[in-house]
Length: 139
Image (cartoon, rainbow, N blue to C red):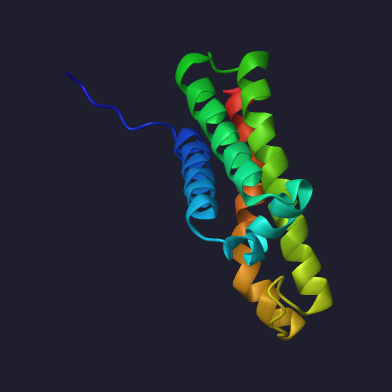
């Protein structure tokens, strides 16, 4: 049996799915997680941690399933990855609101640059995921 390492795009896309699964499980376990910067706007969309958790886990499972069964460069593959992209953009809007306001969703006030540096990974994940989808649809 030969093992092959997945393409870096697939690794990135699956990593985001893992993050969304972990976030969904976390929302079920802890009632303070809606105040996490990346989760805040997702929670505000539903105003219910359980529904937010279900949606996060659903988009993750759909993306994982889509990567496993849909051919590259197909419209179906794009369709199963876009919902996860939407949730990433919601996370980034929460991050950008925190940067602009100088305050995290839980009320902690910090300098704008501090929050920007702290939240840079989330911003880069959104950009990377977008480029990953584009690259995946072209290869």
